[in-house]
Amino acid sequence: MQTMRTEAELEDELSRPSDADIQALAELKGDLLILGVGGKMGPTLARLARRASAAAGVRRRVIGAARFSSPGLREHLESQDIETLACDLLDREQVGKLPDCPNVVYMIGQKFGTSGAAAMTWAVNALAPAAAAERFRDSRIVSFSTGNVYPLTRVDSGGPNEDHPTGPVGEYAQSALARERVFEYFSERNATPTAILRLNYAVEPRYGVLRDVADRVSSGEPIDLSMGYANVIWQRDASSVALRSFSHCASPPFVLNLTGAETISIRQVAEAFGKHFGREPVFTGAESETALLNDARRCREMFGPGEATLDEIIAAVADWTAQGGAGLGKPTHYEQRDGRF
Image (cartoon, rainbow, N blue to C red; front, side, top):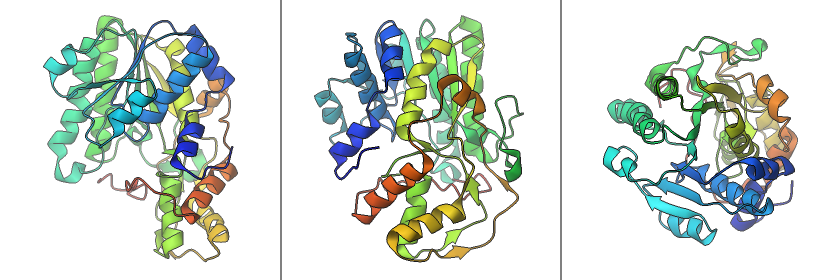
């Protein structure tokens, strides 16, 4: 992994296509539409698709649809040769006017603020998928989901695999499972080839579980160990799997856990950041026997290990944080055990 000192260098690394990405985009037929491109992961996934297509010598439209409430994002994407369409994806009329596209990545979801606006969370996570699934019934759809659809499981179990019964804790997780069921229903009703990716958790230097821990170590804020373990994956690697999943879309949907190989210890990660920053982390509480985990062996068997190792990711987040690199200001609240966000 290259050293990243600027936002431009970071975005270049997060959108750098691998040989496997280039091959996948060479084989993919048709244009690509990313619904919810304005989220944390959407812009770099769109750029990865654009760069991989260019490297493969394939001319295709890469289109991003979102409300574009963040200033400058739309212009930034268009400067990267990514078309943009402003669309409220809860508005069926607006969704109906989106262009036909054979390949759709669905990235829309609401997590934070659920406790105070549960109805909106359910609308975003359950109604919006219905509009998209009906509109793009003749497309291939890769939909992001979350490992939160699983119950907390014993740390020594390695986490649930895709055959494990779901057991969402809290309304966010319940509505995320509803999103999956909506896509499953429309996939079976309309024979729409679909893939559902249960992501747990994508990280990069500006946000994610590791950035949350790094910020607390750096500031001396206590780190709650009650959710003492987690899974993470470098965001570039998660985007790569998403784009390569189109060839596995099926009806009923193909379901895949998407995360890294390790069950990481929050205590050990904090201690690693402490060595980088030259200060002792402060802990509170103790590790529980259970955590929100995700067994991604199937993902590794199908797509291989991610390019970034855990040590490389920790070093990248530490270096970025130590130099005052900006964060997105969106903590993951990974430590929540009651499902309230």
